[in-house]
Amino acid sequence: MRHLAAAELLLLVRNRMAMFNAFLLPLLVIGLLAGGGDTGDPDATARLVTGLLGFVLLGVLYYTLVSTYVARREDLVLKRLRVGVLTDPEILIGTAGPATAVALGQMTLFVAAGATFAGLPVPANAAVLLVGVLGGAAVFVLLAAASAAFTRTVELAQITTLPVLLVSFAGADFALPADALPPAVAQTLRLLPLGPTLELVRLGWLGSPGQDALGVLGEAAPAGLLVAWTVLGWLAVRRWFRWEPRR
Image (cartoon, rainbow, N blue to C red):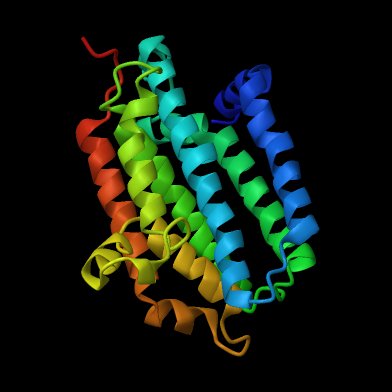
């Protein structure tokens, strides 16, 4: 897995667009936060910063991995890896390693920038915030692998990922505030993967410092939703993921 992740990292470094998204884009975003990220309203600022975390999960992690899995499948890399010592989960995790590390690094920078420049307090319950970030990353890695099964070529990833990207942003209370939607629609959209992820992040950031992390997670519906999405994602990967090119 380590060698596989190292090979994927080398390919990532050779991709100029990926390098721009991985390193220069976060610096631009942090510069914008430093220049005017403090809105004076902690809830609005938290929604802005957590929305950036959602953007990382969708754009840097989900979309990148769909393209990566499809490219490796079409080049017969996945098929050849299966005859080696790696198990199927190890192949998927190793391939996702660099993109996941980049996404987690960007989210760490955005959390630090939010606390430093945007007037947000230090996370009240860092454990809950961490569960939200790691749980969301796991869900979107699985969704990327499942989406790759329905993507014939790398170019088509721009189309096949659109439903997940658009609907997830709509349900994240970021691009479109929940109070601007009919209650039934807003409640339904909040059940989608990005909704519970960002709710846990906000809960960990703005919740009461005296709350116990296990108690918060036990009472938080978003934690249960993330577990459910993780199970559904893994079942979808086992059922539909393709290891050979689609004909």
